Image (tube, rainbow, N blue to C red):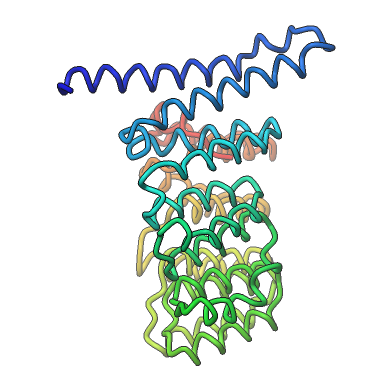
Amino acid sequence: MSKATGATSMRRLVGLFNASLSSATNPAAATAVKSSKPIADQRKFKKLADGFKKSSESSKFRDYYKKAYSVTVQRLASAKQFSLIDDILQHQKKYKEISQEGFVIRLMMLYGKVGMYEHAHKLFDEMPELNCQRTVNSLNALLSAYLHSKKFDNVAVSVIDTLEKKGLRPDIITFNTLLDGFFSRGQFADGEEIWGLMEKNNLVPDIRTYNTKLRGLVCERKISEAVEFWEEMMSKGIEPDIRSYNAMITGHCNAGNLEQVMKWYGELKKSCLPDRVTYITVLSFLRKKNEFEMASEICKEAMDRRMISGVALIDELVKESRIEEAIQFLESGLSRSALRLKYP
């Protein structure tokens, strides 16, 4: 087959899939008669699934149109068409890529993102039958599937035993996933137990590991413990990143401590550039504290870096009847393009 013919065939396949997707999600369906709507919708989504399976017969579609997999699964999940999701993902087993761990991981993650964790686990168990080598990477994907499905506790308790039975050795990603699952839920006793297991496995925590616990402490409003943990992190030579600083700033914002918020904001700027999360967190806090002068300076800085808009701050000044300051802020050389940037 010539390159031109192959490209044309590929376009036809993608066109078929796109046509099916369009017809399955056409807003005009809202005008259908109520009694026939469920049947009509079912047919449309079946057509979408059939079109997807037809397109996936092309290896190029399977390799280069990964986003189409995610979009289709999300569309079907929104319509609660879970049997069709299983249909199109089970269909992928007929292709040679099913013996590649990376391809299986993609399918497991797709199941997980729409809450079909049991299907992800079943696929994990089937990997040897599919002649697909199972490593710690696929187990990490299974953990993520459970985490996305909000069924983390179902698997986390026995994950280390599962690893040993499967002859797999956990890596830092395994533990980071487990720690995130526990600390983000405020289950600190379980999180500390996993931390101990990580050390027993001679794995050195990285910055993501520390950030996970740091965010967990902040979410539980344990700011003093977060400060102590920060000091421990620094003593072990772990360099904080923007996420570390944002966690500490958020913690002090939650505590309502203006002095500490500005102190940590200053420390952040010595090490790295603030990101959009930093600016929004600090500005929201300063606006609540009616610290408009400081907010104005930081807002101008953020706008110079084209990260946020000053519109929200101007609105606050007007609401506080500080019209003159609002006018001065508007006249301080702000460009229209900066003002058009969105800022929640």
